[in-house]
Length: 138
Image (cartoon, rainbow, N blue to C red; front, side):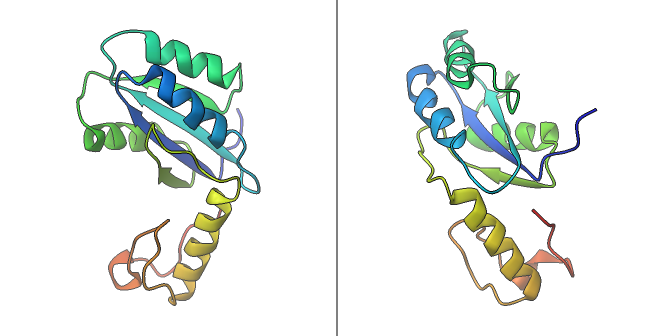
């Protein structure tokens, strides 16, 4: 059994085959943090799953979870249930991330653990609402 990755990146999608290929490509270029990609596919056909498989090119870090739910919030919840990482990050199927995106999220979580983070575009939480004395380690 493989150890759990530091982070799971959940990508909700529905009938966006061509577009999600670029998203997967940008995610696979991430640096600095061990991760997996969980694509939650709510599509009405197989084109999105085929596009993800082509973009992943056999990379075992990319998984597709098919669901009959509809809506990005429902897909994010499904993705969180299937995530193996210590931390769950989310991006959309039309987003391209920079190679250091997940490392910046890691830095924001470390700052949160010190209690000095007020708001971050990558984490978007307040320390008072976190309810934990220590943030997870990436």
